[in-house]
Length: 270
Ligand SMILES: O=C(O)CCC(=O)C(=O)O
Image (tube, rainbow, N blue to C red; front, side, top):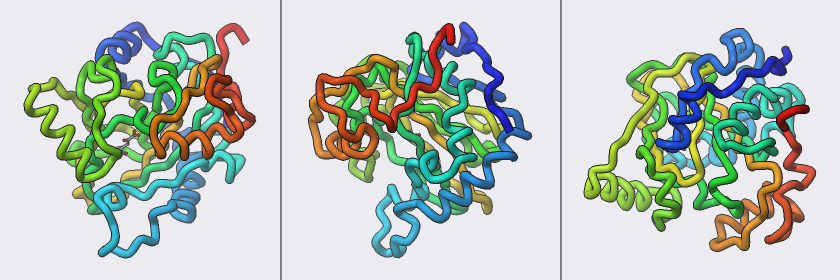
């Protein structure tokens, strides 16, 4: 199945992303398209999640939130087609307002039936690239009911940059939940999702997600894009050093974020 047919980001999606730091794009993939790819993604996620075998007594909040499998596009050709889809990449580029985007990395996030909440965090905490040049797409691979829902975003938090909280953990949850409460930050969620609906959020957009009280797993696939022409920054912390080694192998601070693991996925006019 081809995911080549493109679509433009709408003015409302662009406004939402730029003003609020997040946007919801309903129906970015059709139910048939998702049905063609989801089994490979879910099967790979089940086999390859790095945190799938942690015994319950050693699981941190983060491990209880979801099984996380990274870099699936390099494991399976069908998944590569999904992750490299020009349709998704074009929306990412247009929301960011850039001429082209490259792959930063992909990850499947499967919140298990009964799984816990996703603590508040900022993705760019981990990224050795300018947060304004990168964007996360999160796509529902099944219909997600309201009681499970999608992410909760702190509106406009992307404009505040690094809020200097800790890595995703109980500590980040405490730190950022206090910030949200003390500053009475406005939050929003796009709520229930149909398979193929996606949200996009900016690197510094503060976000979290609720638990999964349902009897069904909640698989989602994410693709993180970096603007074509973005520069690698000097890593500030170990998490950024690790991301640099894993997702930009061989790239040097000051140089382009464009290794052979970062193919160009969409460029305007091509
Ligand atoms: O799937 C979730 O619960 C959270 C996802 C998330 O934090 C992200 O994609 O940045």
